[in-house]
Image (cartoon, rainbow, N blue to C red):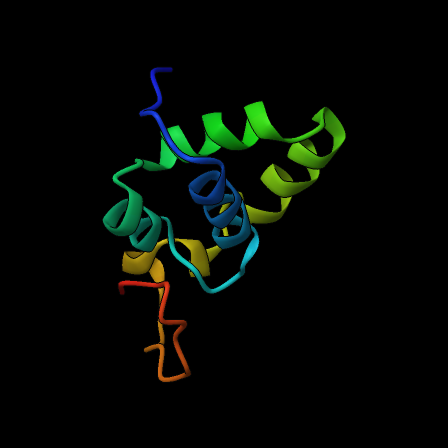
Length: 84
C-alpha cells in the first residue's frame, strides 16, 4: 500500500491516535489524510509483529474506532493537536 511521506513526528502521533480507544479512524483521516487501510499498513510497518497483532485484535470491530458506529457523542476534552 502506498503511504504518503510523513515526518517521524506525524508517524508517532498517528500511532498514538490509533492506539487510543476513542480516536476514530475518521479523525486520523481528517488530520493526516490516511484512510483506515493506510493506517493499518502504517501500523504494520512501524510496530513489531506481536504488537501489531495485539492492536488489530483490539480495534477489530470496535465501535469507538468508527464514527458512524458510535452510539454516543464525544463531550470530553480534545487535544489541541486533534482537529476533530
